[in-house]
Length: 319
Figure 1 (tube, rainbow, N blue to C red):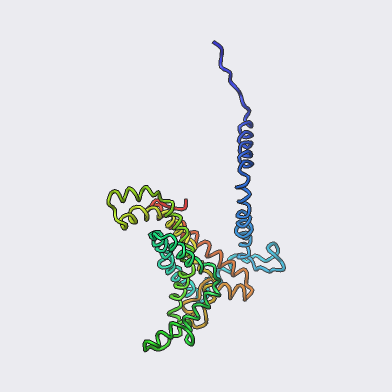
Figure 2 (tube, one colour):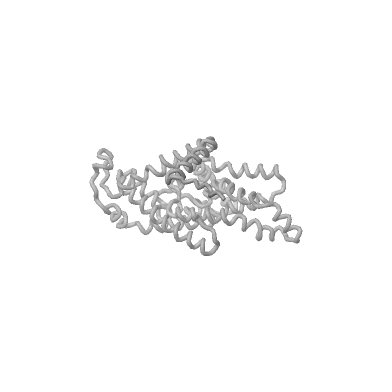
């Protein structure tokens, strides 16, 4: 009986084989990797490389001296930011508007996706989808023009309707108590249709056999939604909700800035608008970076807490 042949390999052979296999895999799927290049460049140039600029939050940054030669001042700018007299107003307005967006703006595309999914006339469904997608492609400047046309005291349709019903016109755009309502309403109108695409994709991924089995068991449309559609959408809903919570202090500067005026500062002035005034217009780039770093840290903490809560309650999370 002959002894079996035992092939001895050197320690480096397996790693070389794995690398060669990986290289062949990349060459075989090179078209897909080439398609990844623009996205990777975008994140490198606009997301990762700018992180190095966070050091100016701890410097008395001078654009002529650069990162290396600017004077280090430690937590000076954070102390100045936290000692700002109206800091509580900024935080309050930011958190309240963000909370309103989670309560009212976030569910809107979910409801729209559910309603569109229930339409049986495909031609009508496509027309409705096209109409609700269009506002996303308009700039906030144009949206502000539409809102002004509706709410203006002189030419606004809403005030004309109020006067026709016997009431007196209201200057909605100059009233602080209406600012948050206008922000939330315009945000829903502009982004609801576009955001619904994700939830429509989640619904389309649900197996039709589940609906067929439910119909055979006598389940109503509402029961099908409750036990099939909603659970199928839950992973997408939770992921997007967690991402929204992680950006709780990021409301979108452009929208707020366009609608903001001296009469609505009490309810509309947020961290982004303050950073623009004091940092960009005032030339205090280090202070602006400190505010941005503060927002990032708070967002990270909120994301970690919300993710753990989601994993514990629903089993869904980002990681």
